[in-house]
Length: 198
Image (tube, rainbow, N blue to C red; front, side, top):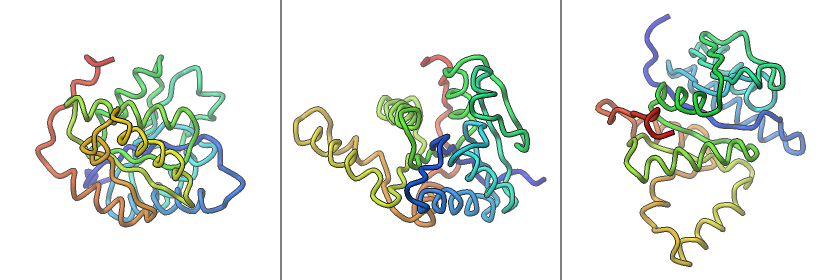
């Protein structure tokens, strides 16, 4: 397999979000886009929920899939043995650091507290200068409307700056958002010594 043209780290739910098929549809679209454009998916290594959907879509579209999962979650999240690379690590810290180091950009899809935590951590790393990789939030079916409203409230309350909000690219279109992230990534990224951060 040829060297991937780019590598996108995708954070998303290990549950499917059964109440709205748009969640799975958007995860599938993200995986297909990555595969069809010669990219590599880096994700949490599970085969359930949106995690499994995005990974399978990327694989079927010809993309390379790298999964990173802690040993404690191998059974719970049903580790995806179909990954081109499946790294089983000991801690969540190792998981997140490896995922970040293997990626050119970060994209959060709908998910739960794990997804929120991963997005906020890598966003914090960006504002502190630990990396300069682009960040995206896919607001499928208005899932993140409430969060985005609260974040703007944080800005108007003086706890965040507009420049921090500007670090996060938000869109409802997988195609448009992925194009923006990949075009923003480009060569010359600052090396990411993330293992020294955690």
